[in-house]
Image 1: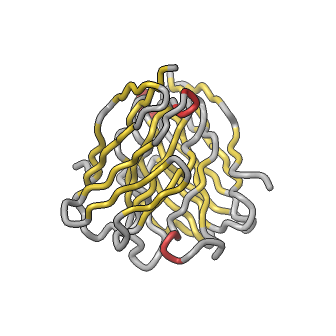
Image 2: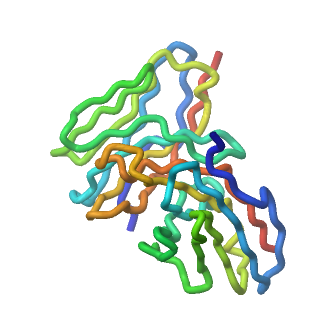
Length: 118
Length: 114
């Protein structure tokens, strides 16, 4: 059973460009969350997708947008890249009714995409 | 505003010793408290989690102690091994009727010396 997969592994972009990151959730999961992890920091929640809609959003500007497809995979798009957007972008999947109710937040993380903005 | 505060920032422990990492939270609505382990170049991996109606949970060498009144919880790693050397994150979230986002601490870099 494949876990959460993300692509690409690494990416280098220039300021002002746009980027799309991709995530495939763990089998059986229907919810995808995206996090940004700056160097030496804990992950910060960007947004969460469920049933192809954004269900929750963290404190990130509208330059960050996403999408969830019918097969539960997801994309994160970042427009007008800034130097400060350089980070590890993590995707986490959860849900699908496979865990006890109180652990609905049991999120499984992918290996991340390392984005460098120059 | 940081809702989950983690300490220490770094920790060095001898092989076979006990590693202790502490976290404090502010939001009393939190009802799920997981710990994640992250190796360099990898995503965080869930280690163990607890809910606030339980004071302690043990899985193998890893134990969470939870103090609801003090709004604190800690991770104890017994018989620490060099392979435990990683960064550890505490986190918290609230269900709110749906699956909520995780709020992470800033992490503790653990080094276990042989």
